[in-house]
Amino acid sequence: MNIGKKMEKAINDQIQAELYSGYMYLAMAAYFEAQNLKGCAHWMKKQAEEEQEHAMKFFDYVAERGGRVTLQAIQAPKTDWASPLAVFEEAYAHEQKVTSLIYGLYEVALKEKDYTSQTFLQWYLTEQVEEEADSSEIVEKLKAVQGAPQALLMLDRELGQRG
Ligand code: FEO
Image (cartoon, rainbow, N blue to C red; front, side, top):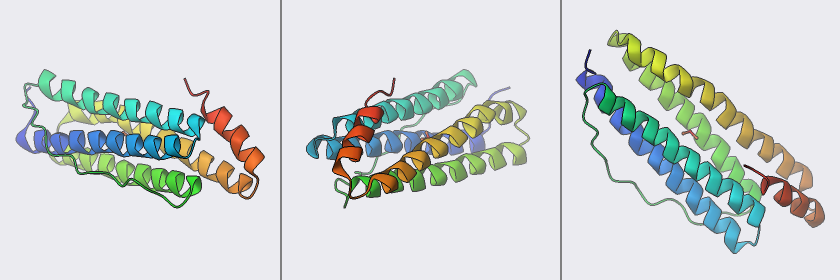
């Protein structure tokens, strides 16, 4: 059965949100490059790639369900932060917001009795648990290394290992 108009619209909005997430993480990568924290920059670039994948998974799903993907404008992300901690705090807050957006999509799928989309969205519900946990863990680690530049460099090296 083809995707309904309400579900199609909601997913198109989410494609925009995922692409914006990628753009935001890329801006965070640029900030870390400028701070010479290459490991953090690497982590953010990987995160930006993941967001692109999240967007493409929605993109392919809409097309597969006989819907129409319509791309929307992506707003410019913020370019500067007060500290590495502030960046990851914002990343964590952003992921919490994305989780609520996914909940919103799920509610549309429930209301529309779109069982296929309900199943499809399960993947994103699980993924958001990981997305929140990853950024929140780094927030805690950054709090622990505050005022200890050597420890920050070690953490930077650790984040540079992200595959
Ligand atoms: Fe696409 Fe970070 O959630």
